Length: 82
Image (cartoon, rainbow, N blue to C red):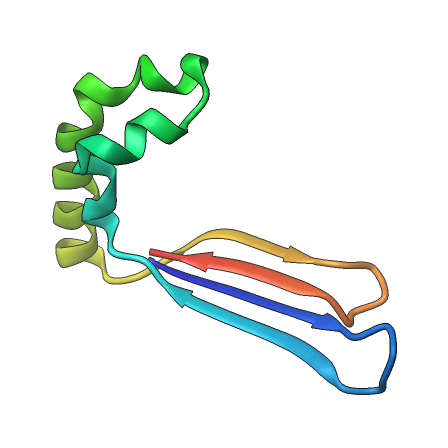
């Protein structure tokens, strides 16, 4: 999974760029679930199955954008790609 954020900086004309590669398998790491809110922890038992399904889908169909948000001014963009 790749998380990409591009946004204008307030103090200059340059852009803030953030790129975070995050492995999909991080969902299966048990210690991660301790840092999530209680209402999200209910999904821990199905996390491994979800990861397997996502990886299988990606093998068969290739990458896709899970989230793609563009601000109306066209300067800010957020993209999460699986």
